[in-house]
Every structure is written in structure tokens, then in C-alpha cells.
Image (spheres, one colour):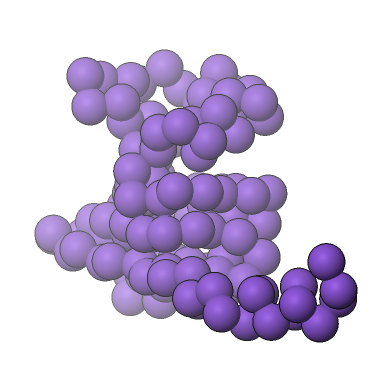
Length: 121
């Protein structure tokens, strides 16, 4: 396939949707990234975490169940939330869960797993 045809097909792909929902209850911010958390989108999650910390969040929960993909840049962003006084992680599914397994994060975090698959620090 000629290189111009390849470039044309790449341009026709829709942009990847990414957003972070922030639900606040009491002093807890629950951040739920949705879409693909990678090099391009991780700074958005970083800003949301920093904003929650600056607002004096007593706890930050990162809910990964809305992700379809996460790379090491996304993982770094998620782990930056562990600076909060309390941190809770809701692991994602599929590739996202597999990444957490591969880096032994599921085994390193305290075993505060409940039926809702939440991990606490």
C-alpha cells in the first residue's frame, strides 16, 4: 500500500474519547477515567488528581472500570494519587486489570479487597 494511502486512512479515524468524571462525597473524590489512559490522556488525569489534592481531599478513589486501555503513563498517573491521605483503587477489567497484574500492583497493595474489588492504601 502506498504511504499516501496509509496516511489518508489514519486521518479518517475518529479521535479517541477520554474524560474523567469526578464525584465528590464528603471529603472523598472519586475519579473515574473513561476511554484510553495513555501518554496523550494521562496529563488530564494528573490535573484532576492535583485539583482534588489542592481542594483538600481526605481520600481519593480511582475507579478504572471505565477504561478500555491503560499504558505505563496512565499507571504512573494513577499511582500519583497515592499521595492522598487515603487512596482507594477500583481495578479495571481486561487489559487494564492485566497491566495491574503484570506489574504486581494487585499483590503489592494491601489486601483490603472486598466484593467490589476495591484496593485501599
